[in-house]
Length: 398
Image 1 (cartoon, rainbow, N blue to C red):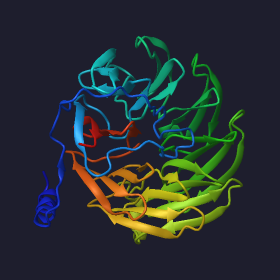
Image 2: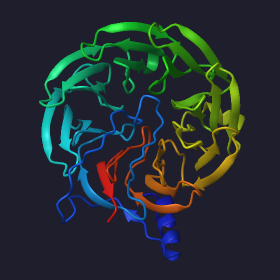
Image 3: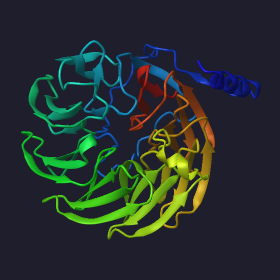
Image 4: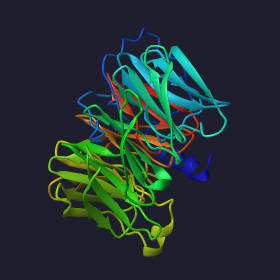
């Protein structure tokens, strides 16, 4: 544990603030209710809004259960019909179905650890009776009831999280800067479009358009709009710096983060506004540790993390800052928004619950590794969130 965390805890303790410690496991004493809600994609929906009408733990949090397999904090679990699905990699790769209420294991499919079946660093996606999960350069489709592999497809680069919309799946190839559309039932490709050198995260899909972020070696980033049916490029919005995470689609605009804040781009590819937090020195843009997060959007507000150690709430129409919350390290975890609370993880290893209107801290929960990437899932009063060292937590109101 770093000196930073020690001094931080002492400071909070001296103020009488209670810090949630991520060292507990097991379930609550009472029998948990079945989980009826769903979180079918890594960012909740095909628009990547990271928003839900469900509520999670609001005033405080306790551990309902913990799944201790080796996971990546870059992916949220996906949930539907009482089941939770997540990929892991301990001695070998595996994809697991858990009871979302109790963490009881329903099935586990072992995939081995050789060749291109590598650590699952991205969220899965639920598509009908299948759940799609990337493992390195391979995309698997598992039967949701049995865990049987229905099909798997091989690619020449590591895959980001799949997104399914209107009966079509879309996936990006990280190191090839490509977007591939495919049939979720069979895995058969429908089209492929090369858009740049890297695609850092998943696409967003809305109203017949696929939106993807791409970056180049010269640190130029772009948001690219593709026709969902054909892959034809419609427009390209260029940024002078690398862009971060996955885009999110709101009313009449697409929002995409960078290390300093967030861009709002119209559906015609024009800049509506750009919000910048605290200054980042020009030479620091070349440091890839300085990354922002995928934004979330709900009820006219955009929520985004930045490399200046802050979470920002920004007016979606004007780009004006509504509030800022300071964590203790870069905020690369993507926010998840409910009607009253914003949940976000930081590189300081802490999960924060913030008031959606004022940004005030409701509670925080300390893990043992940085919280990065997809941000978690909120379903039926619980926050399910993957961590770098602790595995998967289900947090709920005590």
